[in-house]
Image (cartoon, rainbow, N blue to C red):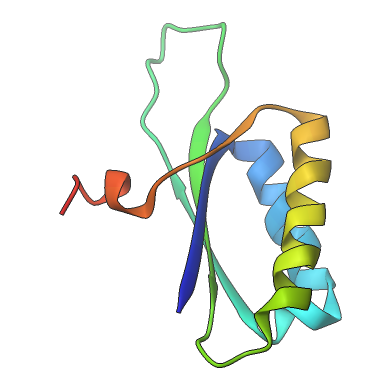
Length: 94
């Protein structure tokens, strides 16, 4: 299984989830999970942050899927800040 992880604004990532679910070539082959991060309630500078994990089953023709996912990630980056996250970082490096 290929797992791509990104961190960014929760609203932007939620829109990305909707875009993935609306794309026929992605919705049938990918699973998406959003995890909301705790933020300091007194911080007005940043909105709610979240992580998104996009998983593609092993054995699926992934080149076309990966290109479609990358295009949606690029659109999300145009809307706001999104950074790639190493999947091991989220699990505490295990």
